[in-house]
Image (cartoon, rainbow, N blue to C red):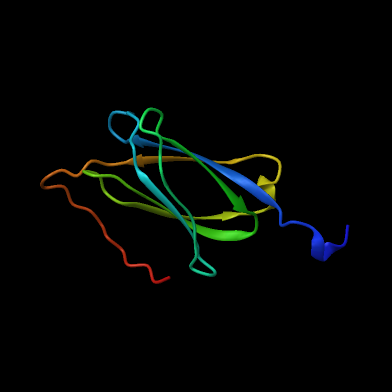
Amino acid sequence: MPENKKPLPITYVKGIVKDKETGAFIEARVQVVNLKNKKTEYNDYTSKETGDFLAVMPIGGNYAFNASADGYLFYSENYELNNSYTNKPFVLEILLEKLKVGTQCNIQKHIL
């Protein structure tokens, strides 16, 4: 098959969102943003019963994984999906921390 006709290599991201303190599953909004072109590649909610999500992503990009849920601190982390994930999924466990009165948090501004 000619190179220009071959599909881009992909992998899938398998993630789960839990409460950091209790380990309980959380229904959270998960967004994945391609940092190169600023395009949202994935935007959905985790399963309420199992806290999991599954996204198909092109390999070779840098992505910001964001998770948010009512009553919890916002989560954001950047990951590179490289060729090492061609034959296996990228597995991600996100532990969200509950908002508590008097708790200090460090907020950093990232310019995309």
